[in-house]
Image (cartoon, rainbow, N blue to C red; front, side, top):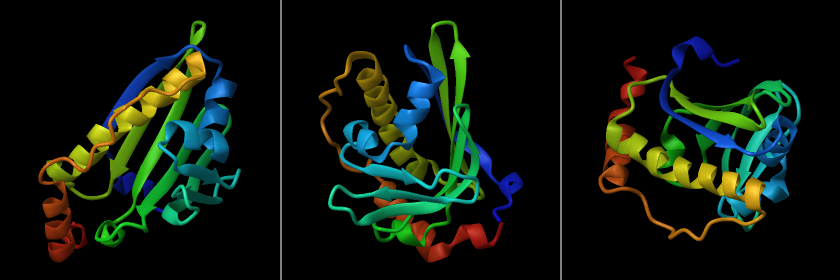
Length: 176
C-alpha cells in the first residue's frame, strides 16, 4: 500500500460545473465518456478501493496505470498514477491524482489535486499545469453543453523533457 502521508500537493485546480455530483462522478469513471474530454484517452477504473486504474491510448495501449486509493462515489476518487507508455516518464515515481466533488448550490465544485512524494522540479510540473486545465475545461464544457472545446494540441512545455531526463538520470526521489 502507498504511504499517502509522503505525498504533498503540487498542483491543484478547482472548477465549478453546472451538473450533479453523480454526473461529474460518472464522467470521471466512464471509459467511453472520458475519451471525449481526455483527448482520446480512456480512463478505466476498477470500482473499488484497491482496484486497478488505467489510462489507455486511443489504440488501447496502456499510457498509465495505478491503484485506486479511495473510491467514495460520488464524492472522492483518488488513484496512484504511473506513466508507463512514454519513456523516459516510465522511470519516474508515481504520483497521486485525487478528484473531490462537492455540491455548490446548483453546481458542483470539482477539485483536482496532483500530489508527489518528492520535490518535483517546476519544469516537470509545467506539463501537468498545461495539460490539466485543458482536460478539466473540456470536461466542464462537455457536461454543460454536450460539446468539447476545440483546442490546439501542444507538446510538452519548453524544458520539460530535459528536466525529466535529468531527474531519471539523477533519481532525486531516492535521496528523499
